[in-house]
Image (cartoon, rainbow, N blue to C red):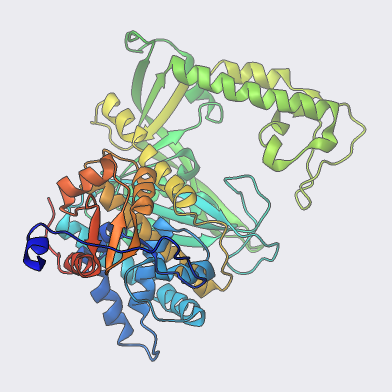
Length: 522
């Protein structure tokens, strides 16, 4: 009978109908979806990297084991470090360390963060291939739920229009949307000031050849343009039309040279023209930055008109105008979070930069109709400046539109990985926290790539969270979830998440197998 049961892979479980769950029965429900993350983690040989770094330190805890738990949990159960430790028994692996060990490891991770990024880059290049001929670079920030400022947590321009201290992060991703590296800066650092230190370090340490860097208008300044040119790199930056020079505005509105409109009304044109830019020239005796003007002999300017972009611009402006009308009626209702952008359309409306509250004035408030009329002339027009004079206009526009990849990457860190608000406060702990989040991001992005881009990062994370099993006795676990993602994982990664029942031995064997798979991927 035993041989027959074994040949038919039968598992017999006896459950008493009057049996109760007892307090402390924490191991009855486990997550198994993290096995997918384990495979990517070990393909990147992160276990070897952290174990090697650990040999040079004088601490007893297993920092590699801590990184595994923190990075897996950041995707499946994104919680605080304290709560993550409480959830460690949901994984099949034994994680044996204290909360103090976790915080101490963050300090260690912060010290080796750049080495870890370089290691990951080298492994991704070897196993997946990197195309760094085109690099997307952008900056975002993450907030802290505190009013206290220090050397890195500073008041600055918040992307979410909050008044909490923030930290700036500049990130570079390759042509295929796979992250390359990130660097953090104090919250009061302007976006454009992160470009040169970030790209200079990445170019040097990552052995990147000539690259065309694509960035938004917040990174468009003379210093960054000249820096890219000096390295013989290329650049593709967006350029504000309404904030541009008179010559650019005239070129945009002049209908001469535009291509015939497509069926949906899209048209474009370009020119190569000398331009003047302002660059830093050291500091004055008072400590202020000195600027000088230089001329670039040839810059390509690509401009285009899109009816869809015009509709979106008008829609966003109308929302701001509705809020501006509210401010005219009652300026006391102003809030930076809810009325951001509206104040620019209200004449005689001023904000106290320290308090963020309206300044009382005897002047009457009214809508600035002249500003609205000026903006409406340029609705639907967009401008891009580039060093790539020989590249066709459409290709320039397509490359610029690829910025959505890095915008989506930042969205994943904030929504799926819940990177903010940041709950650690020491500089070293903050750096360690962002390394954990970066590794989690890499694991998730590479699973996306392995699945052919068919599923979003959020969809994958949800599925891995739902792939759980319950202990049924007789050393067996019962599974109850499968979907199209689990089917794709089995087909393209060779990990079977569709078994309805597995023994503990089989589960541990499968997890162990993921730690042996280090090889070049297709």
